Image (cartoon, rainbow, N blue to C red):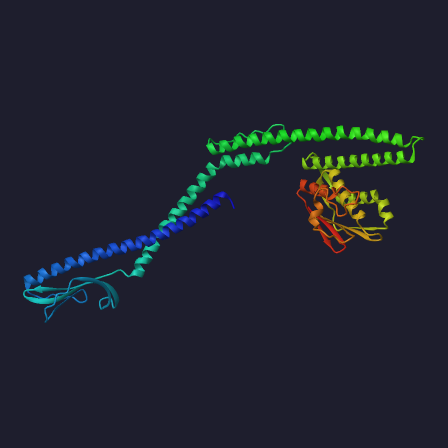
Length: 415
C-alpha cells in the first residue's frame, strides 16, 4: 500500500469517526435547545392566555393545542412539561407534542390549563442531522482528497525523483550523487544521507573487488609454486617411502587449498556481481556440453542421463555463470546418485529441473544451501556447490528449490 493511500485511509477512518461523534452531539444539543425554546414559548403562551381570559372573561380553547377546564376543587398544580402523542384531525394522523400542564386562578375560579405545540419527530430530526452531516462530510472529503492529491504529487515529487535516481544506482559506478531535493528540509537530509551511504558502498565495493582480484593472484601464485616444488620432490629417485608419503600428503593438501581458494573467490565475485557481461544463451546446449564433460564419471557409475526439452530455453545471463550453475548441479547429481540409476533433466522456458536417485536425506533440504555444510563429514567435498548455485540464481532473480522425497532428489530452478 502506498503512503498516500495509507494516509488517506487513516484520515477517512478518523474523519468518519469525528463526524459521527459530531453528528450525535449536534443531535443532542439541538434537541435540548429546541426543547428549551418550546418550553419558553409554552410558558409565554400560558401567560398570554391567562391575561386574555382575565380581560374578556371568555374561556378560550383550541384542541389539541389549547385546553382550559374549570376544576371544581381548588388544587394547585405546578407547571410541568412533557412529551405526548395525540391524534391531529387536521393532519389525520398521530402527532408528537410538547405540552405544558398547570393550574391557575382566574377571576376567582380555578382552571386547569394545557398548552401544546407540535414537535419534530425524533426519527425525522435524526435523519435530517445524518443527511446534513453526511453531506458535509462527503463534500469535505472529496474536496480534501483532490486538494491532498494535487499537493501530495507536488510535495512528494522530489522523493520520487530521488527514488528514480536510486534505481539507477550500481556498485560499478565510480561516483553517484543525488541532486534532487525540491527545497524541502527532510528530503534534503535524506539526499545527504543517501549520498554518504552510496559513496561508502561504492568505496567498500571497490576495496572488496580489489581484494578479491589481488587475493586471486597473490594466493594462487604461491600455491602453484608450492605444488610445482612438491611435484619435483615427489619425483626425486632417492626418496624413502615415508618421505614420499609425506610429500604426497602435502601436495594433496595444497591442491585442496588451491581448489578451496578458487571456490571462495568465485563465490565472492558472484556475490559482488563481478560478472556483469550477459548474452543470450541456449540452456539445452550448455546441458549437453556438460553431459560430454562428465561422460567418464557417468560411465563409471553406469548412469543413464535423460534430457527432456519441450521448448527452447533462451536465457540472458553470463555464459561462465550459467555453465558453472549447470556444472555444479550436474556434478552433484552424479556424485550422489546410486550406481545403475538415472538422472533426468527437464528444460522449459520457465524452469530447469534435474532429478536423481540417491541416499535418503536426513536433514532439511534448505540446510544443504549453507556454506561448508556436508551431509557426510568424511566427504572430500567443500560443501560449496549448492551455495554457489544459489548465489548465481540470486544474481539473476531466479528461484532455486531442493526437494527430497525418500531416495528421489530434485532441484528446480524457476526463471
